[in-house]
Length: 242
Image 1 (cartoon, rainbow, N blue to C red):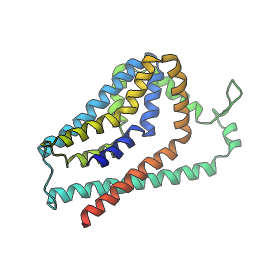
Image 2 (cartoon, rainbow, N blue to C red):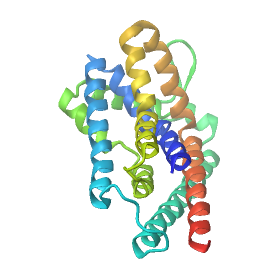
Image 3 (cartoon, rainbow, N blue to C red):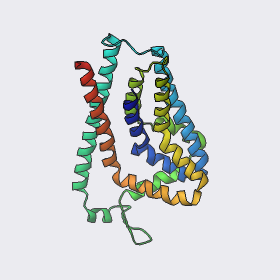
């Protein structure tokens, strides 16, 4: 169970949509407090999902080859297929966009052109600026509401299906669950602590991170979804046929 949760937790931690949104929250006015609200609601929702699974199973994994065990594997297979399909869809969409939008088009598009420093600014800069402006005005309660909303629910569902196999009579299962939770939240915690203890430096570094994710967001989504999806499909097929 631990290897599965490690891969899924890593995918959750680096999921680009969540990371980009959190960086924007940290960039807002009183961003560290809003970021804390975001993280606390994120963790609360994450723990609630795991608790619901463990309460349902009673902390005991279903017997091998039983109907619940087979159904759990089938759910993981379906999630894996869905993640691979999503990765393929993002790949196709990204490919069409890159062929349709040329550098000259970006410079001429609304919001494109050059920044005050003379650097090229992509056409998406205007929309990103509007998003930053909206997030700058959000309250702490709104930031808390964004936490559960922006979780990568496909990966969270994959983790929940894997946790069905947790045996709470064993210490190893507790260790696996704790490591999974910490790893899945590690990127948010690291950025929050960075913003608290090094506010000036973090503002620059996190801005660069946001720019990188915005530039490579589609490739990152394709990579994370495809890798985790193929892993779930391969392991599920093996478990169903062995």
